[in-house]
Each structure stands twice: as C-alpha cells, then as structure tokens.
Length: 158
Image (cartoon, rainbow, N blue to C red):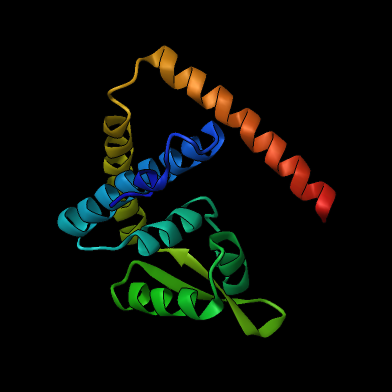
C-alpha cells in the first residue's frame, strides 16, 4: 500500500496532496535505486556522496560531506571506505590539521560518476514523461511556492 492510499475523501486536499507527493517520491526513488544497482552495481547513498564530491573538485572534509548529505559521520566513513577501496575516491591531508583530510573523486571516480549522472538524468526525465513541458514548469513553480512558505515558517520558528 502506498502513502496515498491512507487518505480518504474527507481529509483536507492539502493532506491528500502531501501523501501523493510522498508516494511519487517513493516510486521514483525506488526506480532510481533499482537502476543504479542493476546498471552500475551501486547504491543511492554512494551516488549521492559522489555527487557532492563532483561539485567540489578540491574535495570535502568528512564533516562537510556528512552535513551536506544530512547523515552521520559514520555513514559517510563507511561509504568513503568502500569508494577508496574501489579507487573511486581518495583521501588528501588537510594542510595545518593532521587529524583532518579531504575526500575527492579520483579520475576513475569522476568518469564513473559522469556516466551515472547522465543515466540518472535520463531516468528522472523519463519519470516525468507523462507531463508536458508546461505541466512541469507549472508544477515546479507551485512547489517553489510551497518550499518558500515552508522555509519562511521554519526560519521564523528557529
């Protein structure tokens, strides 16, 4: 049963929309996870870590990776250890801090990530193929309003 199946006609439309968004996210994410596993023998967390490193050519400290990925340092360490063993990332000492190091993509890792990112993009485009370009633009704009409103409420509460 998907998240949306929990909603009933007497529930507010906003709640039913929220559950539909969650359901869509779960379906697309499940497809992406499956494709990453089948095509590249990798996981979404590994892909996400490599995506963060691709955006930072000089590498990132472990705590920065953890913050950006919104996971614990232990999770990042485990994934990083796997990627180092496969030659996809390396660790570089941080000048002036003997306890810290930066993690960065190796050339092999950068190439693999480029291939994965290209496929990932096509999977996401395919997931939205049932919508017209105008529908996508409208949905993007409307969700932007939801995001802005939610962010302003979160900022006010902080």
